[in-house]
Length: 203
Length: 203
DNA sequence: CCTTGCCTAGGCAGATTTACCCATCCTTCC
DNA sequence: GGAAGGATGGGTAAATCTGCCTAGGCAAGG
Image (tube, rainbow over all chains, first blue to last red; front, top):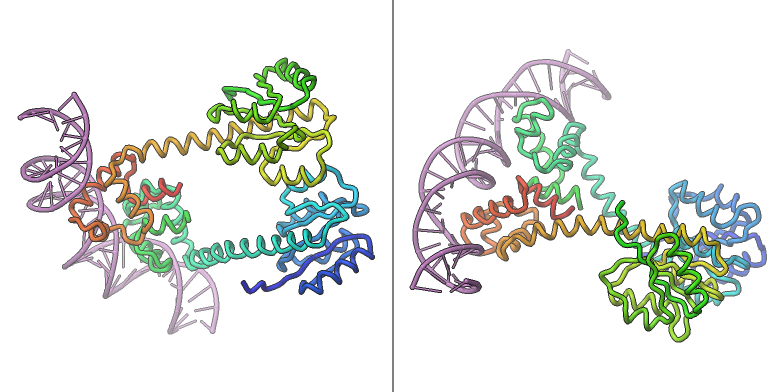
């Protein structure tokens, strides 16, 4: 587990808490980026850089759920650990339903926070693995030409009619041409049969 | 939407609340089964009969999370709406993470409860649809003989080697025999090609 | 202009699949 | 014992797939 970047985005309006947490977390090897307001955080967040978000629920101007929603809108799906001074049950329920990793009430024990942070990074890493597989598959399919991709689509969407004759009829071309494309497709995707192609596309 | 059974399992140790909620919910057309303790509820629950669970978190002897865990152990996965008098944030977080539909604090508005109950039944119905599809597929595969099922398994697990010759080599039989079984398989499953078989199995 | 890449399409040979027929050998069930 | 179903294997013929060759038309880019 290389644990590439261990960045923690800390968002809290209380300067004392920011500095205290920043110190504590940096001592444990994390890179901490602290923000005093939701606006600043949202403005400077780079969606490409992963990290665990430590988010104060009771921020002035924009509460935690709104921040969570904004991030979701922008397609950012980083683990969020809420920290709250006076948030109640309904807020915590909402936050967890919306996908937050946890919802901690102040004061909380450091050990709990650290454990949750580790869980957050573990989650990030698991997602990264999933995506690596997805990207590898996309890279494969990206090698196909437009026509080849269309034939793959036809076959995957309607596996009941996969013979060259049937596909050719749908495209209005000669079966011979479909044969040709299909050979290219199997070659480019590194599969040996239509069955494997379907498995790859569905997998 | 036929809404087959609209049973609500109500578990609360307070007899007044039980009778009040039971009356109110029955008036709205629900069938309510009320239990005064977690033990009684767990003892008489029929896993086959779906329903939405209204569960008091602060039951004497066994708290809500334990009940939730027991149900999960038994493979019961019904929507649970927690109701609590003095449950706090950590409890609600735990409950939602464990899959509860919601966590309501007393006193709550009837409208909210009713809305959540409806959401619970909607969830049940969606799951039921999913399972119907799953069962239909299982019924199809159940028609296969042992040998046929084994061949399906080999093909699905290793779509790179699907020719009769290759499958026959793995089974130590003649390719001719595999041809024969394959024809039966395609016929029984109502598919026209190996590609469709894979799509069906992966679907 | 020339090259490169893509879509199109044909020929041909060998391998494979598919759909018919058939039989033998089991085990299970009546 | 006989019937039924399942696993095994074969024959044959038509259809299809696969690989390897060729080749024209067309568009983009050097």
